[in-house]
Figure 1 (tube, rainbow over the protein chains, first blue to last red):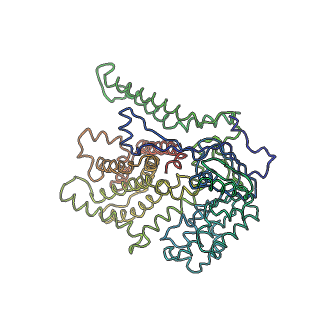
Figure 2 (cartoon, each protein chain N blue to C red):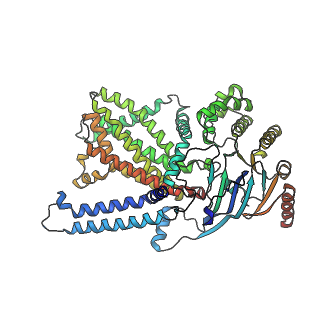
Figure 3 (tube, chains in turn blue, green):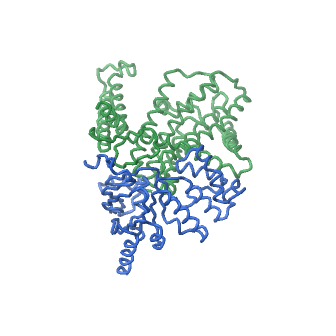
Length: 260
Length: 365
């Protein structure tokens, strides 16, 4: 298989992500046969279970260089999140090859790993561990995170006593204090109030200026145009456009108006 | 490249492990059947009794099925020798780690190194579980000690009045059995729910799934340790003298944990694919509880069931634990080794199955 050779030949030092003919195929059972009992009965009767195959991604080829800010647009169910899952190694592609260099940090939905009964401090360490950090590494980050989240003494109270704004600030502070090589942002900036969104945008710009590669999924086409250096438009699991943000957004808009 | 060849061999060995274990079991069954007379198991006059023939045939069948399974599941994931990047998974952690979905790897070893890499998360998850469970209760961690004691109190009252078992120090007999059983039952059923239960998290960020299973076992072990303390105190109160053999108590606990880890890995993986696994397992667990001499002594079982208990790992762990605790007996080396090897084999088989299936979890949940 030609697929197995080294993808990185030493020439292209800035290559951070390479996807080669990636396909992701989900098998959705046509009837709901999800129990062991039913499956056993079918097996005894010699019936097989019907599957409908659903290609969430089809033959995706994509190369991303260090420092690029890539916007990903498309309708719901077009395959945007699946693409991000392949890159952040949550999903192993059914076919093709994903090659990623560097530490990938998804800016997961704020506080996905938070637990209401634990204190802010305990949650910070838990979330850090989820992101793959050791206790020593979190010790070093802790003060900075608390300062950014502006929580003060509340950091020692259980999370259930926090206002939603405080939770959001804490989640964002933990998630962005990671210095990743590749930052993945899925629809995150649409939550929170204006102040918070401004803060998020600022921090993203700082990441961009520091040369972090950013993958950014959003339905807010204005933000895509504003922040990204390149954009792809995904439809039906395929890349329909891969170009400047303006061009991709325009093609997407045109497609949307024709579809309506 | 002899190094690549060795790794290739390792890949075949580990990827097909459940199959190879079946082959071994089949061969052993055949050998025991054929040599039964020589081993003194059944002194028949005939040269080959029909039971021996059936046993040997069943063994051969099992071995072939194992070989088929082993070959089938080890090919496909086994890398070819020419491959340039061979990630067995035990390489040093890198500042700029490279993820290559096409790099051939041995899931068995790869997941091990991932589990080690996420050991801080493991510790945090165990801590979260314990803190959350006891944080808002008045008695706090004290519950972990009180709960098994109350269970035991109820059972002691019921059983000493309803049935009369001829057992030395029945309360301690009962409590030690129940505690070890709870380590197994709690560990496996929480492990079974762990992968599904944490799918909200693992859909958003990469986390090796085995961490969740290991964390379930971790909290079960800590609960056991909490409850073991009042057990020892009670033993002293009821007149068991502290003995050197108490040092042995650690061994059955480790064996039970390993055994539970193996079973938990299997149930966790199956629960992802089959929704009714949760109910099926609860029924099985209940049946297993009553089939194992935990609340009753083995002596009350009929002859046939008593023999079957020799094949029951939980029975041998619990018996060793009780002998060391109450009677002050050191189990002999042979039974210790047998029990340990069984526990390790179950762990290895469960790990092998789990790691082979874990890539598909994200497609299912």
